[in-house]
Image (cartoon, rainbow, N blue to C red; front, side):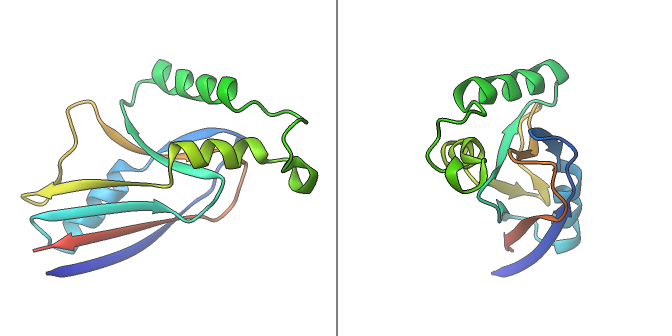
Length: 137
């Protein structure tokens, strides 16, 4: 069993933003020389998430709109007494900080319309860290 580790850094420009990271992750899988195994993608921040879905602009806007509906930026959240980002913490909690993708023949086993995205929930931010860990043979 081989294990490869990489950290990537993302800068975001908006309060809520979706950044496609698929290409960078597949590149690391290729560099890892692991043919069969799993790839873990994990955000190290309490106000971000990792998701897999279709890279279609209308859908990506719909995802942001749904997050805004479910986790509105408002003054009523108790955590806002500290730093006005309770909505981002809540969204991150329910969406999740990581995904795990199988690797077969050196490729991420993503469906035809699937990509991997970093979901910024409290931007803009500089230096958002994502850990990629590849395990396998």
